Amino acid sequence: MKKQKGFTLIELLIVVAIIGIIAAIAIPSLLRARVSANESATIGDIRTVISAQAAYQSANAGWYDSELTCLATAGPSCIPNYPTNAPTFLDSNIAALQAKSGYNRSFEGGPPPTPTTDLASGSQVSSYAYVATPVNQGQTGVRGFVGDSSGVLCFVPDPTAWPPTSTGALDFTTGGANGCNVLQ
Image 1 (cartoon, one colour):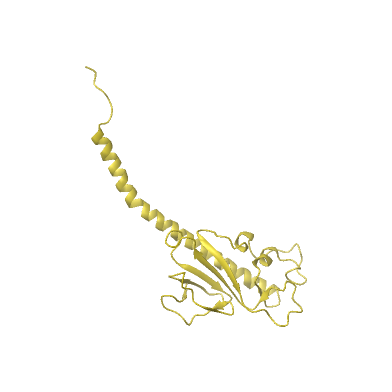
Image 2 (tube, helix red, strand yellow):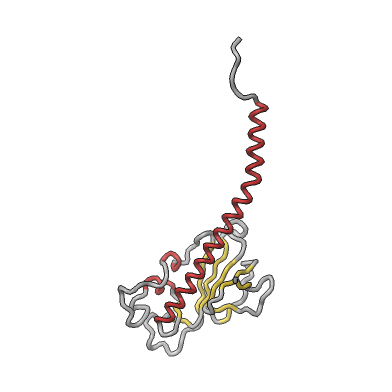
């Protein structure tokens, strides 16, 4: 009689059980790593917006712009006497305010300057807040993030309960679980 080669059903079940145990251990770690990567990328984007707005403010008579497209295209239509071939301030992907790295993006501009006669774009503001909230809370991100014209970057443990903004900038008087916790 010829001996058959192969695996028995018990051996195959043991291998499948071992793979299942390894997957049960590894998948939560991978999800946490993805959330951490999404949050890090979002923090980096907010810092980029803060830096871009600071550079824009320096070139634009001390005013920020509520239209991020002006930071991505610049030129004389946004800043008086700004050369068309001069460098831009912000990447167009960030200025588009589309979901990125598992976070929805939004932008709040503060009050316009007065008088506005010497301003080219008409969208200059004295303050702003750039807000990022998870697309799927708990899956793509856990915390919400915001950066404002003061240069502060902070997070909110519950992004559905944002601290109130006053004139487009953050209000740090609310603190606590629903307040804005400054990132160091």
